[in-house]
Image (cartoon, rainbow, N blue to C red; front, side, top):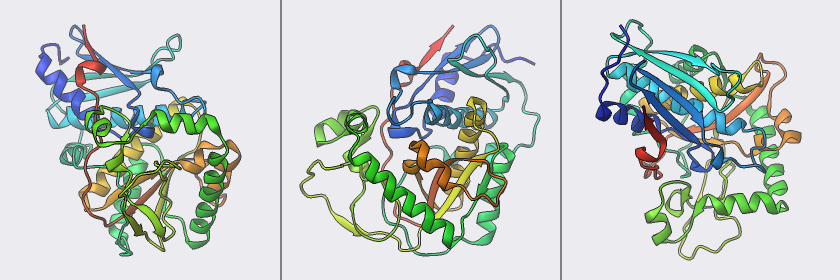
Length: 329
């Protein structure tokens, strides 16, 4: 049975859950429209939030929107509705990324409902993690989660991790001489207590984490060369635990699937007590991205590098008010 009587409060709650998803620079590049007559959500790209230098193909934008789509699916199942998803439903409207038709009641045993409590507990952490190994059973559960969304996940071995770290170092060097990327970084970072406290998007300074004094964890320093008096320094992991999420193809639909897989993995990791961080630095340069993959695996294209581990709790980054991203018709 189609859901047609969903009230404004319920629609708003579902979208609030959806928008807890991560996105590059916390730009939150999504818009939602709910159609009362059909009981369907439309997920659209907000192209006012693109990053022409860092994300020229809008790949990262679609990853973020895919993550929001996954949260919407989880929230819908938790609330008792079955979400039927169609990706890129209208070739004539490239801004329309997906439709989600809600039906009543839930029919599938998808494992989505139990992930709901992790949606608002999951926060990107730029803090140091413990050197503790991630148990094989947890790794297997995370790997299976990516596969359920049509993607691949691998935990790279020592030689591959070292290659990744070298590529990230190269990406940092590229960024240092790219004025356009520096401007984008400045646009999406919020420095100063007043600006950070009033922010509804971007990365506030409290989420930058400490300056890296030592260690090998690939953590982007969002302060760049800007001074931040009183910012602490810390030693990060010497053997960081990384995971690669990837797909066989590399088009808009693959990116949306990868975003859903990424968010499923992040929520699963959160449920297992892990802290999580996203590391897209090396993937933002076309000449470096290809070097990140392991040619011996079935993963054709790496879409995201995750850093996982056991770390301290961190604050959530700000979110845009739901009324800014939701239209109800």
